Length: 244
Image 1 (cartoon, rainbow, N blue to C red):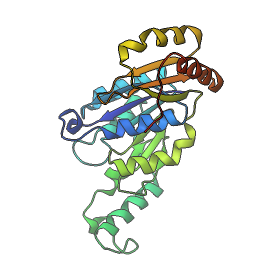
Image 2: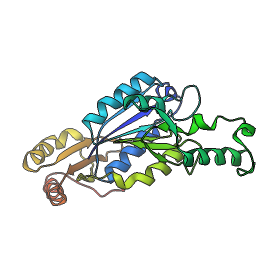
Image 3: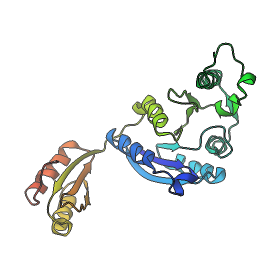
Image 4: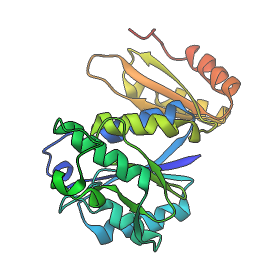
C-alpha cells in the first residue's frame, strides 16, 4: 500500500507549531508495512487542498489529511474534501448528537435537556461532513473525522488524530519490512558496501549520519528473509553496533 500524508494549517507553515502529526503518521504507517510516498503541508486554502486531494486520490492507495477540520472561519478542509469529490456537506444524526453532547459537557450542561439554541453554538457547522463519507466520531474532542473513498480526514489536534487513526489503523497494511542497525564508521566509509548490497539484494538502504558517531543504516524490502540476508552480508563488511 502506498500512502500520502497531507497536513493543513497556516500555523504549521509559519513555524508556530511543529508538524508532529506527519512524523507520527509516517511512523505508524511504516510500522504497518505501508509505504509513505509523499508528505506535504498546505495553507488553509480550500482550492489548493481540493486540487491536491483530487491528484493524490487517483495516484495512491490511501491519502491521509489532517488539520483544518471544524466550524471556524479558517477550517476549510472539510469543504475542500467535499469539493474534491463533488459532494455536498450533510449532517449525520449520530455525529450531530455527539457534537451536541460534547459541547454541553464542556459547559457542564445536561446534553439531554439543553437545546442547540441554548448552547449558542452552530452544531451543524461542526458536524457537517461530505455526503457519502463514513463518519468517525471523535472520542477525544469536538470535531469528527471521516473516510471518503480512499481519503482519511482527521482533526489536527494530536490526541484527536491519534485516537481516530487507531480506529481505522487496520485498514492500512503493506509488505514493506525494515531493519535498522548502527555503525560508528563515517558515512563515506560504507558507501561501497551499501552500493554492493543494493546490487546483490532486492532492498533499499538508507544511510543517515549522526554527530554522535552512531550512523544509522535502514534496510527495507518486501521479503523479510531477503532483508535479513542483506543485513548479514553488510555485517561482514561494516562495523555494526547494537542499538543503545
